[in-house]
Image (tube, rainbow, N blue to C red; front, side, top):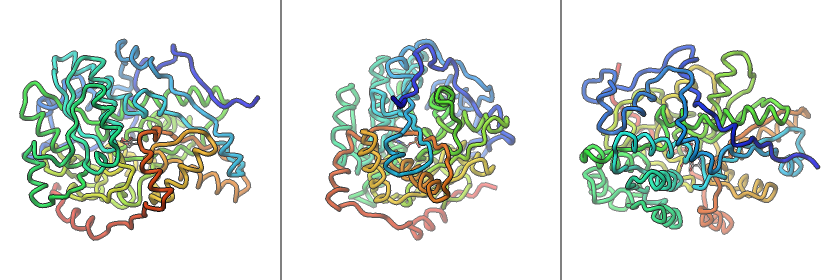
Length: 452
Ligand SMILES: Cc1ncc(COP(=O)(O)O)c(C=O)c1O
């Protein structure tokens, strides 16, 4: 029998997260206070986050120990499986060897639980009672809802309006875990009301939902804010993915030539890629690393690498990142988790250093790849993950054309069991591609804050 899964025992759940900041050839630009334009200090972030997470955000220690209680919760689903996609390889008739790390095996259905658990844990340790957050597709919201349930915190989720309508079962899942869910933009916050005054039928966006959650946290001393991507501490928590994958690829006796993940704010990408980039910086890996984003929201491939706000209402600090402009409202593609105007500053930084590549995929190509993958591998992927699959298939077909083998490793960031309506719509021919919305992006970029 040919081996399909390369799995680790529970004792191999990583003991520490890997922080690439310790190994970067040049440090990242600091986040800036939006009023003074000076680098942020830990106290500036204290109304929003517990101090342990703020310190992780700016840490340059290579390894940050994972608390025992967090590892214990990780043990519900980690180590996550690594699959060799032998049936997909055959279907593509490619000499490439394709592997995928499957984060959809988590109880929430994606990688997001990897950071939801430590975020809830550190908040609990520092006395937080309530957490407010945003969610796009609902993967992050359901992860935080579960994690808050584990640690006895209240959870309030602002869910991007178009996903709220497209994915009612995600909302039900969040509520099953005890969270309250509000479609965003809402009338509950000043930021939401301001958007609705101009766009009464707004689809919403991650940028708007972030503004609403940040506003709620900033106004209530008992409420903190939790973010599902973008920030350094979130990307740090996701490195369990790559740390496990390195050991699993060793079990498979193989070494990736190319590493692929979809990128919204950059967290599942960083989770797989950063431990490998750390090895690459030490000369221990030769892998090319590719971040894949939707053609409708191409921050890495078409955005500018400049300081911008993380949200639409401009309540967050300024971060240097690849951005399409914080007022840009991406088209309502079904990969809701990829509808973010910016890219995480750490991912943007390694892109600016030329350490990674970026590629785009159109919505219909993403779904075609997802269906092809499902028929071969028996897992229906999340629409976001389909972007990584589409690019992995491109690489495998290139290998076939060249008649050369190559080892492809990609992150299957989540399953699509709550996204079946989007598959129904795709099969019925109701989905469309979106051309790069150049004019709207140019307008949003024209409004970028000027920071020298
Ligand atoms: C399954 C899945 N993959 C990928 C993403 C993109 O987010 P990130 O870039 O932070 O991994 C999301 C976001 O919601 C998601 O739910």
